[in-house]
Amino acid sequence: MSSASEQLTQFGWNEWFDTQADEKGLSGQRLARVIAVDRNQLLVIDESGEFRAKLAGRFLYRTEQATDFPCVGDWVSIQYNCSDMFALIHDVMPRKSFLRRKAAGDTIEYQMIASNIDTALIVQSCHFDFNVNRLERYLVMVRNGHVHPVVLLTKTDLITPETLQQMIEQIGSAGINTEVVALSNVTGEGVDKVREMLQSGKTYCLLGSSGVGKSTLINRLTGGHRLETNVVSETGEGRHTTVRRELLMLNNGAMLIDTPGMREFGILGAEEGMGDSFADIYAFASKCKYGDCSHSNEPGCAVLSAIEAGSLHLAHYKNFIKLRRESEFHDLSYLEKRNKDKAFGRYIKSVKKRSGHQA
Image (cartoon, rainbow, N blue to C red):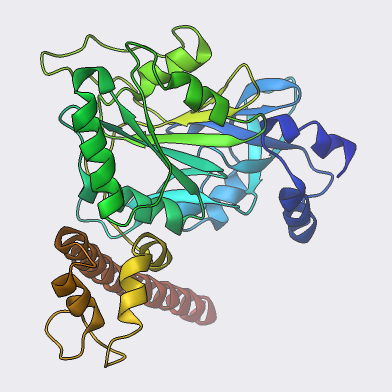
């Protein structure tokens, strides 16, 4: 590792990125990490500190897909002159891991959430927000992006220990073997366990619905009021105030990305994440009589037999079927859209070629 890249280890740089920089021809160039994105402006950081940046014109011209633009957590190649107000971003490094979802609305496209994350902290409130099906949806996205998941159950002060134990058992019954940490931002119970989990030079991301206590947890971890939080509502739920994704440096050297609550969370291109999150169902599926078994009504279906025998929970199976159908539908729509885009691109090139020839 070069002396320049060694100075970047405090921001998450490692030998994997060294190799990627060599292969991409970026060795020796100035590199920085994106810590915030606000429309067309970005905030980046390197060993010299934080500064604003924008995309170079050439990069904008050659970049076609939205997912190829920088997101929080990305490493970028920059050019910076002290006399300029903004540094220029010329390239984006390959991503070691990522979090992405289907874009909100009817658009069949990916939306990047963050990148180069070591662990995703999936936050659910024990009070009104707890939902195993939604948790499985988050786990599919996280595992599909090669990110290690940990589940945080917050607001334990609003429920009884017996209710908390029932929730943890529900998670286990769904075949989820991810580490679960219960905590309360009010009493502080469990917060130290989260703090001990965060390692220097590693990047973590908080995911969850609005008002589950993500910003309050960050304030506890930083020992101050780094992020604004609103008054708790009558239901006991906080009111969400995070409006953009931002990478924060903690006192112990760990990095934490806070994200706005996601109202809509579509699954797209999540085959690998499905296999990891529903490994128990895939294990039974390997024993089905037919290789193309849909696990709906075929004779000799080992998945349905496991449900009948009580070896597989029905709710877990139903959520698997729902997510798989959703993913397949969106994947097909996405493929059709990409093919149309490519065909249109070829048409434009042919028109330009004919026009140039006639001229």
